[in-house]
Image 1 (spheres, rainbow, N blue to C red):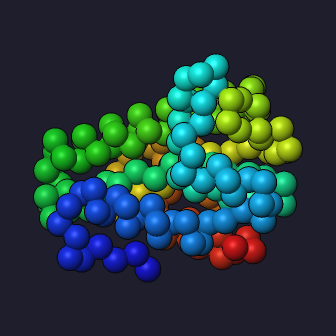
Image 2: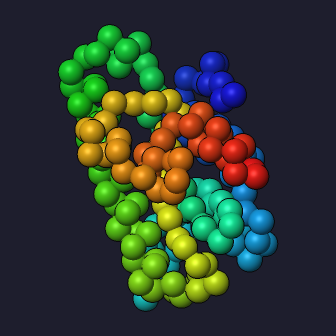
Image 3: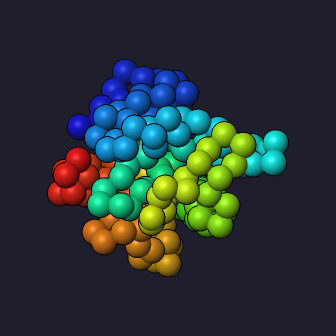
Length: 163
């Protein structure tokens, strides 16, 4: 399980979270592993970074990690903290959906080639479950995995799908 005690820096926590995610999420295809932690470019412009990648039965899931820490202030339900977190995750899902859609339309770019992928999906992952609007919470990435999920939910999904 992911532990972040002793990490006071948001930056350190983000690095720990993303590094922890690399182990349970993997790709059985070596040609896809090289896209993990890569800044993808199209037409000379950066279009996004893949934090982790998984492939199961022809479906490839590109993962974006978002470090939103479940703090005491969040747990108390302070309105602006909960609202800002929900807004951040909602925008992250919208942006990641747009990137994955672009990669489906244009599977070959300056430094990537996803043309071998039959079914390209996305997921936005946070260390803990956070409140999001119902329309975000109900979006599905693949059977059994919501588009926005926590690290624990992803671990459970991966372990049930040959990870």
